[in-house]
Image (cartoon, rainbow, N blue to C red; front, side):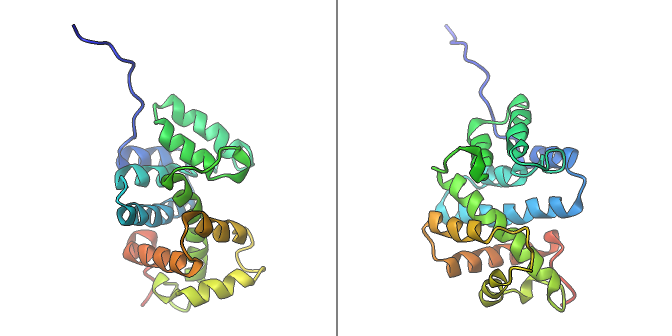
Length: 198
């Protein structure tokens, strides 16, 4: 006799996740941000021996609702409900909720901690790339990131404390975390539009 089981929640594949992102996000820069966070998060997945496909999808979807819910706490709370309606699994949705400090969802898993650690930093590395002479991520290094972190007028929307806390939660030094994310983004520079004119 076959046992009947409830339809399991699933992880969409990367193309499905990209389609959801593009459906709700028209901004090219927001799409590029999702790709930058994905580059960093999936590089960590490979380093830690985790499920790179699952981590990739989580990173792509983490801000998918930002354009339609630009205010906290609507993002990511209302977005999480939309993903649930589409059958996106608990692990992904929980990680997305946990990347917002105000959500009340504590970061427990490696995926949750990694997503949080990479989110603001990926945006910051992108911003620094744009002000380099050749607008290239290959011109960014740890020293330039740390210098810009002290410049409160630069990329004001990036929460420096989240970058510091993220590295600490991951259990890596700030320098190593910055270096790792720069290299992950350099490996995807073409896709991120950060190859520049070098």
